[in-house]
Amino acid sequence: MVVGSKINSVMVLAGGVGAARFLRGLALVHDQRATTALVNTGDDTVLHGLNISPDIDTVIYTLSEAIDPQRGWGLSNETWRAMESLKRYVDVRPTGSIAAPEWFNLGDQDLATHFYRTARKSEGADASQITSEIARAWKVAQRIVPMTNNVVATFVELAQDCQAGKAGEQISFQEYFVKYQHSVAVRAIYFQGAETAKPNCIDELSRAEVIVIAPSNPIVSIGPIRALTGIDEVLVANRERVVAISPIIGGHALKGPADRMLTELGHESSALGIARLYKSIASTLIIDSVDADLKDAIEREGLRCIVTNTVMSDLKVAGQLAQTTLDSVVR
Image 1 (cartoon, rainbow, N blue to C red):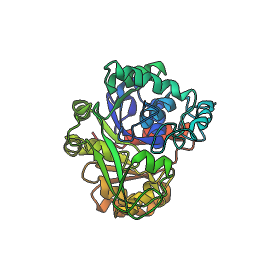
Image 2 (spheres, one colour):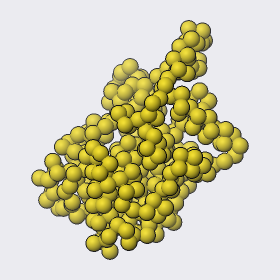
Image 3 (cartoon, rainbow, N blue to C red):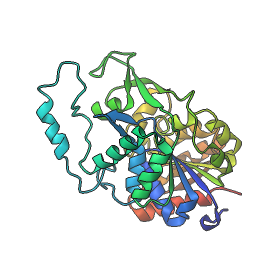
């Protein structure tokens, strides 16, 4: 078994609140300077002319202990005066204009991050450089890296006619997730630009002593990373060093649409369903104690299965989960 303090390098494939909380726990048990988080950017968007990277910002804000603990995103003690002031312009914008969108809230403090990211991009800085600067500004010691410096955009295809559009139409992930509160059924997911995008950290990924697939939505948080050319090949080649944590507990996601999305796309919404999605790229799956009865079935899929508490209700539990994850990799 690996002792966490003796591991030189850990790579975490990350996206969303679950990954951010896991990384915060990992910071307790492993040298932060030897941790790299490769973060999903498929749900990045541009609103109000600003470049917004929700998963990257959630990870950085969480690691800096500035995140709003109730929402799991955005900053604590946030105010919303800029968003409230946008309502002044709703009645004057021309038909068809996308100015002053009200469905995507940006807090007053959070706006500063988007101002900085947008200005630096206009100066020619790439996503990795900008992310590094933002992380340093928030005193984050872990290395936070966007999955690619190229633009990859996640789109969902509607399964039926609904308020979002007609069946077969595609909408952006943020429209699906925020505007329509992931209440519309989907029948396909697309990662536009993934086939030509160059992944970041692929050499580091191949050299990492431990590779963790965080407890993130496997379809729209981990899926965009896996869609990049070469990522799955590296994971397959290093499968014995890859450990995944199931984001599905008792058949449900703790946060977000992962459970419903899995079912709609023909997968099983369970820890066993997660095992089937990851069995080609991971040798170990960590599941929650409520799913202990699935352990044998998961191991019949060819993975080692570890049962523990995966609900990161506080920092202590997150640290324990991180240590269990590190200890699970056989060298």
